[in-house]
Image (cartoon, rainbow, N blue to C red; front, side, top):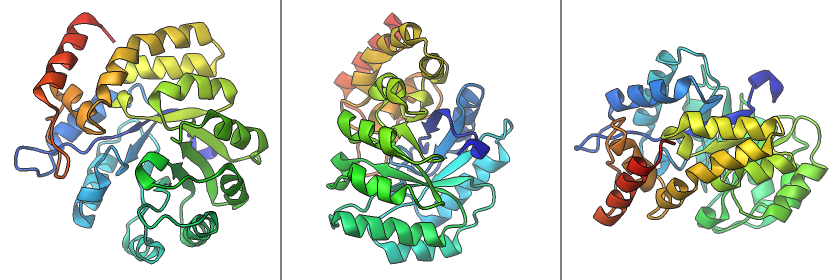
Length: 293
């Protein structure tokens, strides 16, 4: 883990679209410049990047653009997961992995495998992958949980280096942090739980809000990692109202609306997602006027 410098704040990048729902590279360029001097690494093609509605050609083009504009040489994590192990391995064989430092892989969704199925799925991926893998547990989206026991079984694989934990289950996270082997780390997967999870031993976060507020969010994370929880708490409270609004109508709907208000990229999303309601837009505008973030 340390050789990749994956510690601190990783931002789950949005994929900007124009009015024709095509990828907006000018907007992506502004987003990279907006975040690059504050965050510690970038995550592309995760949930926030609308990975389920971008095709392989678009995915490769986005990665190529990010690599070409990565002036600070930030580590780049690629979201690669799904509910067909065979298809993931086929995609892996076709993917140009140059410039990719690791994969973030969401647990299989919809078909709801058992814990043994989840274990075997990740083991097959880890055995085949030329890059390290970070597990991604988000039961609210996948319909199943990666238990602490399964995570710890997987942690023994030398190519599985960590987990993004978005279960919201603090006790489960504690068990993983307590019992994990050296070289395996836990990242917060819920923005609002970053500080408490770092207090328990997480080494960072893969965050949504850092798209819009990279400086404030990274300061919060860094204060927590330094053990300055009073300052970290202050920063989290500053972001709290925006955090609630950001997820009120789902992700990445909220964060894209905030980025639009900040004039970084448009609020456009692809169906079946729809843009933020007028009411939410007004609340976000008011929050920006009232807070410096």
